[in-house]
Every structure is written in C-alpha cells, then in structure tokens.
Image (cartoon, rainbow, N blue to C red; front, side, top):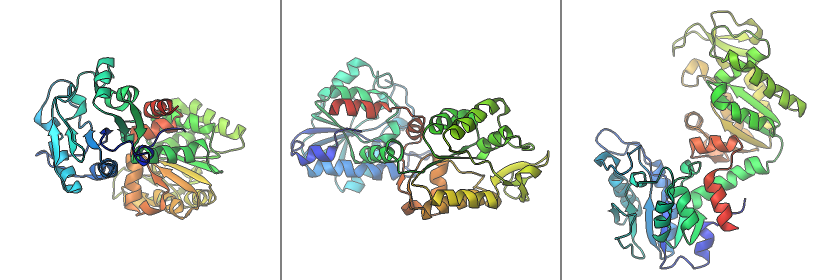
Length: 397
C-alpha cells in the first residue's frame, strides 16, 4: 500500500517551522475522579510528537476521549489530565486549548498544544465538509497516528486528511499499515488464522473473508462449538448458534474447495457449570454429554493446532480458544500462545481478549506485531479498506 510517512516528510526538511496537526488516540481509561488508570496510549503517541518537535515544528495534537455530546462540554470530557500526563512524558509544558476549530490560537515552533476533545466539535462524527475545511486550514501537515480510529471517517481522521496541504501516516499508523500488508496482502504461506470468540454472528463476515485467503482457519470458543455442530457432533448445553449452521458449513466447504481446512476439535474440556472452580473433564469430541459445557479445546486438539502454527509462514490471531480466565480451562489458549511464540512465522494479533492472553502468558516480545485497534483490526480482517488507509493512499498518489 502506497502512502506518505511522516518520517519521509521530516527527512525532506519540510516540517521545520511548519504547523503539524497530529490526530492521536489518547482515549485512556479514568477513575471516577478523572485520574488516568492506564496510560499506554499516551506513551504510544509520544514518538510522533517528539519527531515533530525534533524537526522544529509547531505541534498540535488532538484526540477523542469518551463519548461526549457534540457542542456540549462537560468537565469529565476534558483532555486536561491527558495533557498533564503528556507534559510529564515529554518533560515540557503542553498547553490545552479549547474552542480551537476557528483558530484564534498560535502554536509556535518547539511548542506542543493539545486541542480539546475533538468529539466536542459539531460535525466531527459525520465529517461535515464545513468542519473539514476549517481543520485543513489549521495546519501545514496532517499526521494520522490513531489506528484505533482508522475505521471511522470523521472530521479529524478523514476530513482533515482531504483538506490539509499534506496528509501522512505517523509512526504508529505506518507500523499498523506495514504489519497488515505483510500479514494479509502479501503473506508468507502457509497463512493460518485463529478466529475465536463467543459468537459466529459477530465474526461471520471475518470468517467468510478469511476463508477465501487463508490456508488454515482455526476456530475457538463458542464459534468452535457451532462448527462442531455443523460437523455433526453433539455439544451438550454449550454456547452455540444453531441457526448459523448453514453459514458454518459454507465456510468449511469454501476452505475445502481450496484444499484448506477448518480443524474441528477431536477432544474438549467440559464442565457441568460455568465457574472458576468447576470440575474440568477432558473428553473425546464424540463423547460430550447432554449436560456438558465445552469451555476449552482438549490437549490432543491443542497439540495438533500448535504443530500447525509452528509450521506456518504467517499467523493472524484474534480471540482466545477457551475460557482462559479460569485456570482449569486455559490450557488451549496457553498452548496456542506458546506455539505462536515459538513459531518462526510472522504473527499479528489484535482484539482486547487476545491482548489479555498475550500479557498473561508473557509473549509480547514473541509476537511479530500486536495491533492497537480493536474495531479497526476486525474490519481489516473482514477485508474492508479502512477510510484512513484509503484517504492517505489517495493523497499520496
């Protein structure tokens, strides 16, 4: 994918003395008193800001925070705590500016100005042309560095990219674009995808899109139960979607037609109740009782899938394959995580539960790329072209 990188703009010397507008993702969790409880996104935004400072630019940075009502400011919607934390990380003041759309403020070279919560601006969500025109006039260079919002065509993610003199990808967004291209556009084969979660319905379009491209499609969680039903197996009282058996069968058929497969579990870990202290019983997939809940894949299945992952060229991972939060039912997800860590394949992982599993098993350094955007990552897996990618590619043309 062709797009302009902020690093290339800086290398050309163009950024010196210029106004740089950075759209970051600073949507961090806060407690009831407004204190930031986890600052990963702020820390992740620092490289782009520092790049602009080092290049001698006047830096403006904005983000959404929470779900404010456009045009109605409330104190809890303010980026003030974020500006304070960014100031600590940069070791220099970060001035917060409100009501900034019409200008009326000056950012000087070497200064960082934080523009108040962009979702407060009327027309932001629907990307009004009037707002887009005003945003483009605020800067000489627009830098999109918020992959978590790349699937949304809003004022500060899309409109400004059309109206700013220059539009480019910041280091975070560029890394995502590179990793996604490597994993999906031009993957080293075999390409194996793990798609797991409670419902087929929420991941159906992803499964259908991947079935046209991957060499192995590993399903887990409630999704695997639906596929087991489609394969003629009994699943007791396990979570499944019987009304989607036709869709599951079609995915299996699409894979088979290409000489690929959806591995169906040969053994599972069952319990009679859904609780952390439930007694776990390993059973053959053909022996599930009517009152059983399938809460994980069994060790035989986990070993087969681990071998498949270790032989892969590229791995895409979205979702744990069992109830890994419960110690008795974490074996499958742990085996998958360890296999990915040991595999020579390029791996890309995304989604909140997946990131929690990666953290739990300490394999952060062994995953090729960990995606920062939940919804955006899923839309990429669905085969959609994200608005941010489209507009940056068009502007680079």
